Length: 139
Length: 410
Image 1 (spheres, chains in turn brown, purple):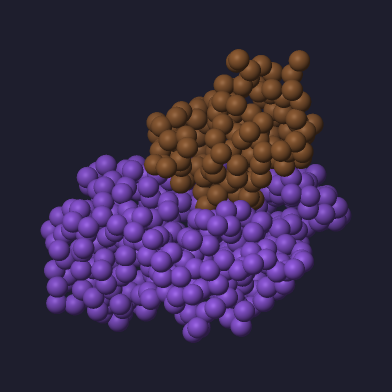
Image 2 (cartoon, helix red, strand yellow; image 1 turned 90 degrees about the horizontal axis):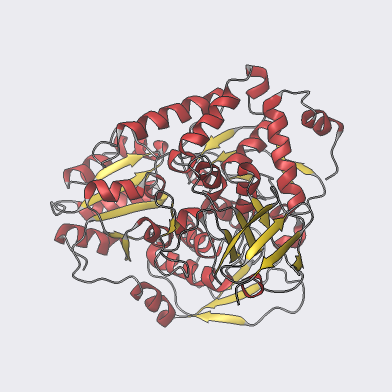
């Protein structure tokens, strides 16, 4: 049985993908090497990991305003995350998701998303319904 | 969201496809944040450097800019954040022709909307300072936090697409820092040591920002013995916004609003000399070969440029070290007129206008010039630039200049 987790109504299309989870924050400008598709900020808990096509599960958005353009910039190069699950985001990440039509949800009722989800989980995100489902999890 | 008749008509396309896109985007964001309605704005400030936009973003702007003039013109004054290219110096920085070509396309598209190409992140010092209660759609976190805090204006962080949308509709969703309830204090900090220079004001901003760590937090800073100047609050605010995603702070007796807490005030967290020194020590690298010194992020005021010129007078920057100063076009012209640019160039420095280092293809510049070790007095830049492959060091303006002359970090 999928585990269904309720959240605030989000932005973007429903998507299915594999979770990449860390108790850390996020900015496309600060944290990503958008040429090679990896986390490039030393000290980030996902340093060296590929973010391409993953559903990123992180704590909060941070830093500057560039993410509002950068999700859209990465989209035609197919070097973009498939979805975003956060505890809470700032306006920039919401604006960027709306502009690029990337799935984004936050404000979960059941607790800290970085503990509710695990890296490798198969996850379905349904922003319009305000929920995310863990479809399968490796034991 | 409750929409007026005009807003409903805009959403239905009665004012053309450009404004239909703009208000549709704003409604998606507004509903995400439970905005009840729109609020008119008096200005928009658009971040649209081409490193962020990419080819896809420029093509998007060009698509909108192809609409009939009546459908694409902005409804309120709209200005720009720093660009990625200064056409006078880009080759010296290792930037390429394709970068310059993309920049020209973006500028042409933005001008077609009637956007004023101010290319600055210090518009509150140089263009038109907002006033208390002024509702805005400002991009650049440093611009927002200074305008909200020091001047008492009301803006959320508005990324490029949203700021452009606000310019096109003349309004923005009323959520976040447009609302009284979001402007209350949530954290308290007490300064037990006075920052000695702009780098240390940035360090304090970084310390408070890391402790807050959320857009929803509004710190109140107490214990300030003397009124900080505009440049000190500029560096403090930009670092606070960068490290913490914070958009508003209060300083009793200094900022436009004093902190009002929803309940009993929380206990104040002390910040003393030990905390400031420890923050600076995180980035120390004495003896390292120094590749590039950057004064920017935020762009320099005229007073800061004068201090760089004074520190460089009669000296020569080491041949293996580049010194780059970034400022707004207005301040660059003033620096030219007053002889400051010449004094800096005589020492071997570069004064660029209308750009900011991290918005100027920093990764590609590092690769083209073989840069790794970067030194700056900007805590904001320190926080950003590690992800671009640099190893940054934070120090005072004077120590940065001394290190540039020596060719290694002092």
